[in-house]
Length: 105
Image (cartoon, rainbow, N blue to C red; front, top):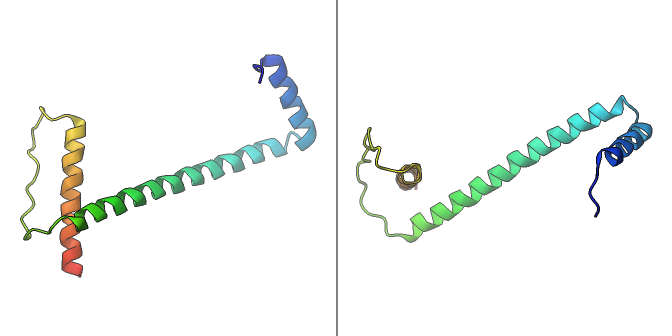
């Protein structure tokens, strides 16, 4: 497909204005924007649900030790990278979810 330059884009914009009218174009753009925001939110929820199900499957596959008190992370740990801190927080959250699931079961 050839590159589109300014003249081609102006012609396309002119055709759109002729087809839909100048009043309808902003309404259509708002509708498309809302649709994209909803789509993005739904795909994000699907990814989170997939991550939760994978985490629950790995937690259920591992033998459950006796309930242990949750150790808070040290307040000042500058040596840890942000990725390492995030991993530790995810592990702690998984342990808390497993404990609450055991209590509810």
